[in-house]
Length: 140
Image 1 (cartoon, rainbow, N blue to C red):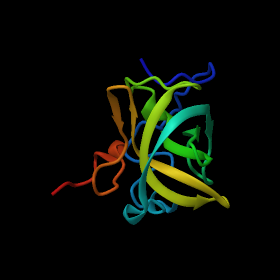
Image 2 (image 1 turned 90 degrees about the vertical axis):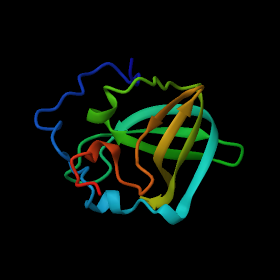
Image 3 (image 1 turned 180 degrees about the horizontal axis):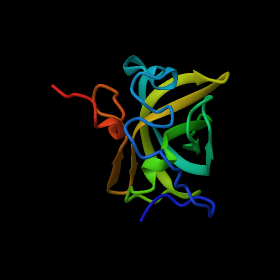
């Protein structure tokens, strides 16, 4: 099982390594994540897409989440990481997202820490905000 996206191959040569594709722990994009700005939103997935957040990055999976107050973009993870996750997310799903609210390209955006759908939880960052796909970093 995995995330359902438009039919296409997501495998990219060289994208499976340590922090590849501009998704390492010290990139400009990853440093935008702010532990002081965490919040939790719940409601319905409106759309699911991929895009390249910044130059020299591989594709990001993101969704639009419609809450009672707004429809907000939620950046999940690099698509090369999400291919092997068990949770399937589709438009119309009711989910809960915890993440850091940032201003991205002039728009409010959430960089997700975790996504809950039913009883399933997809962890995307640890308690310190480090991306789970960067497991190669030295842990103390």
